Length: 204
Image 1 (spheres, rainbow, N blue to C red):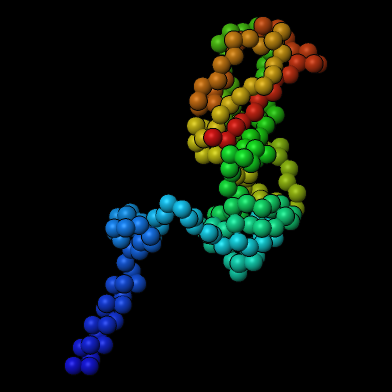
Image 2: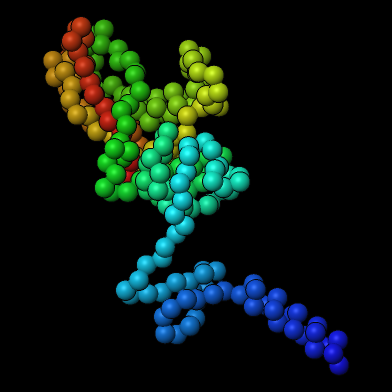
């Protein structure tokens, strides 16, 4: 009899350990897609608050764990206070709407052929950016310890907005950019020493 009771207890404990859990609310039934369902109308969920040392260092954790999420309290090296998640090799800062300093970046340097007037020219800004960040250009140089596999980049061109903040209207005209990052333009004159076009990528 005692053996049966012990066996039944082990089975029940195992079921409880693997069951879905709901905290708060009135019905006590967790969402079918959630392992942990937290419901509240006047309280939040407080994640661990700790001091990261650097995005490439796991500390104060013992190792990088993909999916780990924390609130960093430190300002050190390349980390600032805010939410971070771990991608398995380093800490990535979560971008928020009030953190405008990391919401945009400038287009890498690219060339435009303005040697002759032409209409309906195209330049795939996203592919140019992707190729340079992936370090597929043989003319790249990295410092000791820098990743030779490339700089992390957005996999989907629709993850970004493409904005031209200024350009030489004596050289370029009829500029448009689609949501895939393909720019269409006309060349109306050859570039000069002062010709510019300033392209910004904005993270959605």
